Image 1 (cartoon, rainbow, N blue to C red):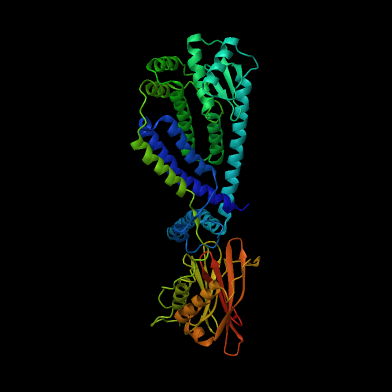
Image 2: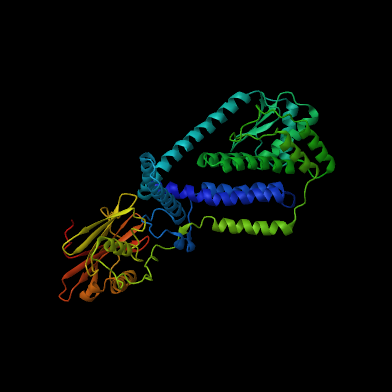
Length: 528
């Protein structure tokens, strides 16, 4: 598993999940009475799906979001934007610290952050920290559930009258499987324990006037399968243990489970509601006996504020209004259809349009090192090359043919540019691109394919616009080979002279972010 896979999932789930969770919180705050607590409880499923499912559907809008200098097709556009912005911020802070004569320790730390964001080490660091926290959280949840069951659940059976009433309520509510009853120790009220096949724990001494509403409430928990809600909450807490908003929403969704069960168990008659509310009023706030939010057990007793809201909704229930329900359902459906659309639609739409002005400009002075550095930076920033924009410094050397300029990136890689005194490109290479493990493509890019012809046309226009000397010298071009590394595609185009002899070789990254990453003549000029 690549670190980028987890990095993609975390960034997309956190950013889009934040929007979904915020929307559900607003709906539950403003529209509870016209929608009903059971509908609001169902809305939390949208947030859980976005937080848990690592799905990415193609979206044409994502093509424009992919950073221009992206070199890794395994990182999707949203995550790549985050990685790029972290690297840019670290680079900007590094330059500011250099200008302010910052301490060497701070400078080295900023340099390492910028390099880690560029070469993938930041993704691996995120993966290690994330997995350590997720597995630790999962172990804690399992241990707490085991502790709760061993502390409060017994094998003792309740009285025959209690069991008969429970079976009657289950049949009345249409439950095909009647959960077993056991005696609970230290719990102030009955609760359903378990995710898939729950058991019901009942206190030993329960007054007869409160037994029926208590069991009705627990029966509603079983009927609404709130154990599955607890299971999803636990998974969300494990997967997003570092996000405080997820913890807040876990508490709110648990509260909505209780409110939905109240709505189902209280009945429609006013007398039944008053009796149910009277039972709620006498529930004690036993904080230490209440199961924690990550325990798969229903919670009857709550703090005074939560109980007051439950009692108020039982005595004064709202009325579901279609005029409110319909647009909320439509908005939820739209959210479900777009919240996973985070992947690029195609990896074959990266051929640059070449809108940059010509490289060779009137008045260029290539007789001194300052002019040579400026010229090299301008070439590295061309559309169709797109490298070296964030270089920290340059090393300029004079050669027999002209100049050799090395543009060094914060990651430690460099762009090597060589040209003569007239500005004719002799050699170029972006050393951050490594194609040692290039694998053949299932459908190779050749001069006979539409994509191959498009790349040859692009290269012809690039040479005509920016390297006219080479454009006038070559007579034909052919695609020598193509290959793939993960989601990255590369091809090599050979330029031939009038006799059919190799003149130049141009290596291109076809996806993601189509660009030239190496250019060399038949004989590479010597480096200084």
